[in-house]
Amino acid sequence: MTARLLLAAVLCAATLAETLQAQVIHRQRSMYSTILIDQRGDVICLQFSVRSDQRNQSCMDTRRPQKMVLAYTRMMMAGLLLVPEPTSVLMIGMGGGTIPTVLAELYPDAAIDVVEIDPAVVAVAEQFFAFEATPNMRVITLDGRVFAKRAALNDSAYDLILLDAFNGDYIPEHLTTMEFLSEVRSLMKPGAVAVANTFAVSQLYHHESTTYQGVFGDFLNLKTSASANRVILAVNGPLPDNTTMRSRAAALDPSLRVYDVRLRDFVRQMSRKPDWDTTARPLTDQYSPANLLRNR
Amino acid sequence: MNLTIYSLAFLGGFTIMSLELLGGRMMQPYFGSSVYVWGSIITIFMLSLSLGYLWGGRLSLRAPTLGKFGAIFLIAAVTMYPLVYLAEPTMELIFRAIEDPRYGSLVASGILFVVPTVILGIISPYSVRLLVETTERAGQVAGRLYFVSTLGSALGTLATSFYFVLWFEMNTIVTLLTIALLIMGALGIVLQRWSGP
Image (cartoon, rainbow over all chains, first blue to last red; front, side):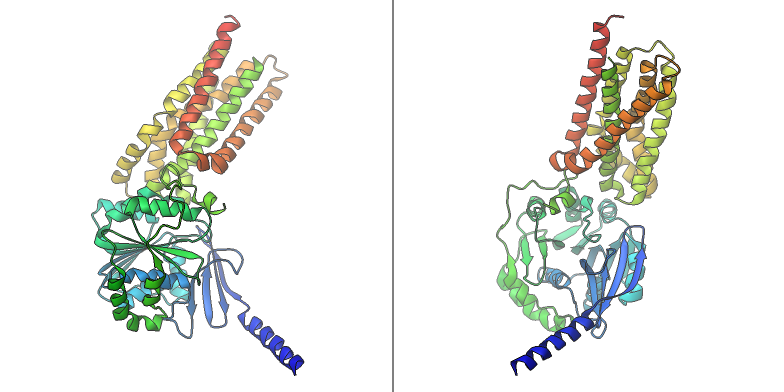
């Protein structure tokens, strides 16, 4: 009996492993990276790497395309706890375009600027991830830093800014510095929020924390067990209290269910207390070895 | 005497590549980290070095000495150091004036790096002239000098990208390079005085 059960379990595991075996369905070398798309069951994922099984940038469940598959994309939606009705959104780093697509569905009247350095990524998002720019959406192919600097000169302002610019495991170092974040802050309306996807591990965690602290003061720190990412929520103004955020979560969660997002969990998981080395040197344009620090 | 000239050639090679790497990083906040930013900086460095070689060859015709050779390093230091103060305001102006980051980065690297890199380019042909004693050995001397200065370039690249950017601010690295050029240039001049006319 036990042997039969064991055999069944082994067979079951083998079948599962087979169906979960990733198949590479698209591979392309662009000017900035190697774009790889693989499929595992119904889920297709975008990676910026040569081999499969590296860090996923974007994933989509083809049976339930609205579902936000990757934990960090769901975590970035926590920005809505601080700005529940965004009217102008800036997203730097597009990936498969999951987040701008969701925001455009939720807020059809919001103006959304998506800045992506690599035109090949935009094409792949359209071809494989059903990304389609809405009339209120602009997709701008430009370096995020160059866009931010130019937008600051033009007095642009947003109430929700999402920062998610990575190239595989490579971090664009000029998008990690206090100067960059100050430019981002100058693009934020009063009370606006900047939501940044960052690394939860390595020396870089400490340095990024003191860098954000230096520009924004106290921020909300969101870490979940489902993700090796840490999402920083920095406000251009005072931070709201948990009661306010809980009531916002209660109001928003029903409409977010279809995306698999539960904001009330995030309210619980957010921290306001520094759990990093507060003496870590902040990153500046003069000192920004983010990729070297990530390996320490 | 020969050892000093080889050391100076090594330092010249080291400084050129360290500065080139720093130059690319300095421009990223204004023009991004795209391939064309590196394209701009490499173009300007190559162009400047080629002019420096030409100029260095001409200078080597006029009674070359170790003292004059040392003076070239002092001039390189003096033209490089202002980057610490001028790089940011210059790039700020160019960023406002030129929308296309390709031409912005090309103009910025032209304004910031042509002068010190031309001066650093003088070093190679001038050092060949100082060391060559006979026609038969000219090729061997040139080969050794290229070896030493290119080795300096390799180490300058490695040290800057692996370690200096982790330890120091970029302005500190430029300052350290300046100090090294000043000390070694002064050494050349002192040795010249010391060994007579």
